Length: 238
Image (cartoon, one colour):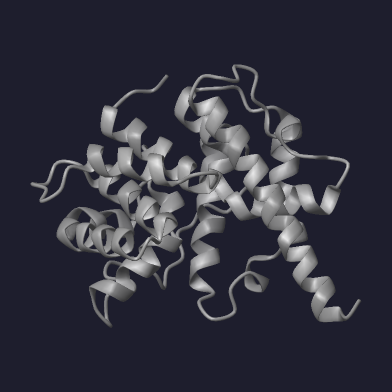
């Protein structure tokens, strides 16, 4: 097997493990797993794969804790920290290194909010209001979709103000993505729109989320964004 084939196989394996973890998170958020712990939700027999899955999902791997007040076990904390060490942020996105830095900030914020001390929770200074908006609304939506894990209750950063200031652009992005059958991007932008709330809407977000749930098929990461967005729309913390 060539090095390229090996790398592709590894990536496919990591993606499958991330999907499996997302399925477990969705089950917990829907109340189907009252004993969710991150360490039990990954295949610890494949240590590198488990760490990669946690890294791919980022803070969403902790969503059952953040949204439902579940206790965070020390084993879960160690798993998240090990993922950060195993896959440094600069190796995750060479084109836009600011994006993984923001995701790292969010992970540190989430752990700190649950009592983990000694983490750097300083927001990346180079990322301010309007980040990613320069080329236009479509490219901004692409950036926001990649940062959809920031759309969680209790989180505050400059990008949240942008989500509240430009709800129409988010809705344009949602509609465009649905027309393109890019359900993952549509779900991520719907999550931002749910977070922004309030503003007059040209579309029924509830209907959008129901549609995405129907067409998501077996894509657990689409379902994860849909479930989180629905929780925010309903204003319920189960």
